[in-house]
Amino acid sequence: MHLSQLKGGGVICRQGDTARRVQGADSTYALALEAIAAGTTLKRIIEQYGLGEQVDLLALAEQGKLDCPVRHPDPAHMFLTGTGLTHLGSASTRDAMHATDEGMSDSMKMFKMGIEGGKPAPGETGVQPEWFYKGTGVVAMAPGDALLSPSFALDGGEEPEIAGVYVIGPDGAAHRIGFALANEFSDHVTERLNYLFLAHSKLRPAAFGPELLIGDLPRDIQGTSRIVRDGAVLWQKPFLSGEDNMSHTIANLEYHHFKYGLFCQPGDLHVHMFGTATLSVADAIVTEAGDRFEIEAPDFGLPLRNTLQLDEPRDVEVRPL
Image 1 (cartoon, rainbow, N blue to C red):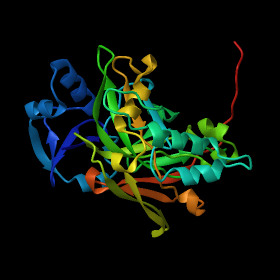
Image 2 (tube, rainbow, N blue to C red):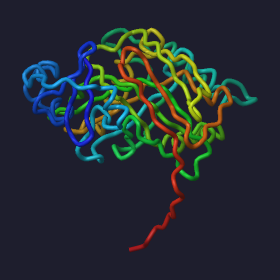
Image 3 (cartoon, one colour):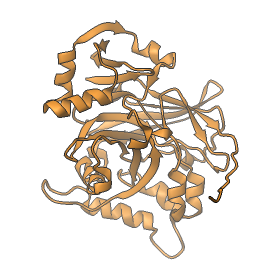
């Protein structure tokens, strides 16, 4: 089962090749809260609502009518975060960014820690991954919307990832709603200056969707990431995800995010991105305004497409009170 959400309200459920409106449903977030309150599954709640008219999901996407598949009604209670160095092929690019003449980079050390302890046995705690914050729901861009690169940015590059989407129940427990494709848009040139600039490089918008996979994450995800410029493919590469291609289990990544009480506040929504091993910047691609990022994987339905746009400069003024 896959869920999508319409801008302005409305939920679409796709089963196989058929997509239909969920009758009377306004948002995926509200359906998830209802499932928690009833002590049942999201799938069961949708079955109780029933499915209505059939829709052309691809046409809706092309018309720009699809939103992120989940949003919080208050953007301040929606958090976008992620982990890095979690995939088996992710070390080389990061090591090239941060290597020094003094020996192994901190990125490679972190990657090796994940290889050695990122997949603990059930009931055990594994090594914690690299972690970063991207922002609140303000920076969650819908499929088809522009990804704004700040005027001071040195780069605006794609990161094709899988994101887990979670809502916190009344008792502080995290409930996974589903998984989605994500573009964890970042400034890799700023990061390359010094690994301590990683936090700055991640404070950018991100997009996820258009469809939310309900159920288990496939162990072997094979997708494609590309950049289209002036109607032609500028760059294209496959990307791999799923636990078969990762140095951490999803459960370990989830534990090390939700072990913090800060992230277990009732009603909050979390979009947590699991990392990537494929970056166009590693192939010396320099993105430009108007470039279109496309991320697709058959397990997740429609591709995620967003265009790079440069934001206008803004004055920074701090006013004393």
